[in-house]
Image (cartoon, rainbow, N blue to C red; front, side):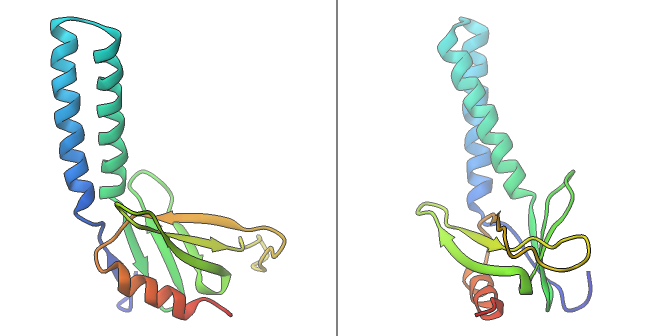
Length: 141
């Protein structure tokens, strides 16, 4: 990343959900250990799934340069989208609004595939309004 790179950290919502998932998984794990049952096992799985989902979002970062946006997640390849690829940018969700990017994928030769579109969901980040404004300003008309 260069000096012009701005990195957006995920919102604090994911920390709260991670803590809640750990508590739920711990309580239902304890309950399953005391009296094994399908209900406790089901909610233990829900608690573990909630924890893993929120940890994935909590450890993600969004890096923006003058020409690209990259979603950085641990143990996964970066997903980068050049501003010239963008079709639209929208905010979606009520409790924890996230940004959705619709873009044309780049071909191996560097040209854009204008016949197809892909979508990238960014986690909710701190200072999301500034990120949204920057993306809308850099989206081609």
